[in-house]
Image (cartoon, rainbow, N blue to C red; front, side):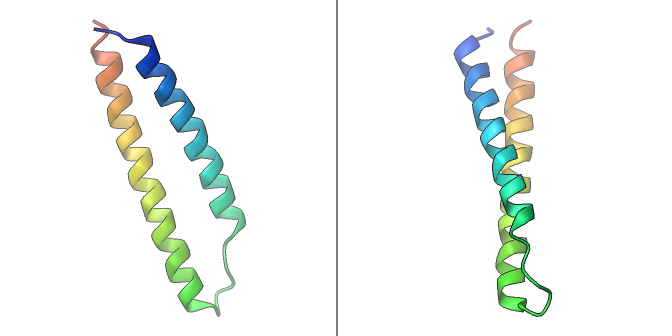
Length: 66
């Protein structure tokens, strides 16, 4: 069953994640700061995982509308 509040939550979460991704890109540390770059890359992988989860939830929610 299609639930509009669930879709709205996904839209808001997606928008927040997109803003986080832009913030992450702007904060790329210099190459010589290896520790900072390692943490930055870890944060990027976490954002990737969150985006993947959101896509999966969106597919489930939209498939449930049939």
